[in-house]
Amino acid sequence: MATADARAPVQTGLNDDIGEKKRLEMYRTQVIIREAEQRAYDLFLQNLVKGTSHLSLGQEAVAAGFAAAMEPGDLSFCTYRGHAHTLARGVSVEKVLGELMQRDNGLMRGKGGSMHLTAVDHGVMGSYAIIGAHLPIACGAAWRAQYKGHTDVSVCFFGDGTTNIGAFHEALNFASVWKLPVVFVCENNLYMEYTPIADVTAVPHPAADRAASYGLERIIIDGNDADIVYRTAKAAYAKARAGKGPSLIECLTYRHSGHSRADPAKYRPEGELERWKLRDPIKIYRERLLQFGVSERIIAEIDAAARREVDVATEACKAAPPPPADILTADVYADGGWAWRN
Ligand SMILES: Cc1ncc(C[n+]2csc(CCOP(=O)(O)OP(=O)(O)O)c2C)c(N)n1
Ligand SMILES: [Mg+2]
Image (tube, rainbow, N blue to C red):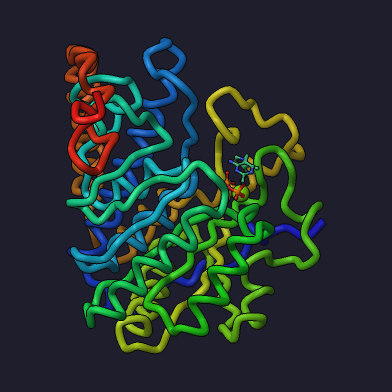
């Protein structure tokens, strides 16, 4: 079975092209995601999170790096594993947890739940539970930008399993032929729901090994190193904005928890999780900050602030009421309501 190499050498990137401000931002984003996702799991155990939820514990560097390289008008398209990307675009922890808890203070006022996070004002153009559905939609958004002469880039996140569905191939072909400003990001965490991607895929690298079919460069990166993710994202966005078309980026990473809330992930070989935890993205990034001379005190302050933010958000969500019944008919029809139909 081909697996991503958890022991791939860390590229330290000791040059200064990223800078301290951006690095602190990326560290903070990763820690906020980690704390918020762990809290979401705790709240689920307390029966306070309704419906299913899919966590990105272990995959924080992908969300942080791609978001940190974006401009404010750029668009993110997420899967059901979308809390991390939503938080990375600056949506508050309270709005995300409130949505998971079906409260009126949630991002969709409690009506969407974990798998439908959307925040157009933050460039989060939806979370899609149907595998592959959002790749052609991201192409559509990118086509709009190209047609109108806008410079925004559409960034579409999906998993390794998504590369085996027709919509992936249709979207890649279309984006390439039309030179659309879209960046396809495959988060290769080695597993589909419970199936190792390598067991059901003809090539070892499910995204990158297909890139040539669409005239694209084969790009595989360490998705647990936010600096590498950030630099790769920057280059892909610049290419898209210059009218040079799409990119397909395969990020090697690993989810620490099961596929969704109730999955204990017993199907994983012994020791695999522990090996990947040695390359935990937050651990890597703490070391990176220290290498760049950021003090332990500043790192501890960021950690404490993130924990406080998640604690305060949790209390606000617990105190928030459920949405009123009339929310059921709001935002359902584009023409503003259903009253005229009666
Ligand atoms: C069209 C379709 N088929 C099947 C499913 C059920 N399903 C939900 S998640 C998933 C696995 C996806 O794996 P991957 O793309 O690797 O994403 P990951 O969950 O690892 O982030 C499947 C098959 C679905 N949601 N949509
Ligand atoms: Mg996967």
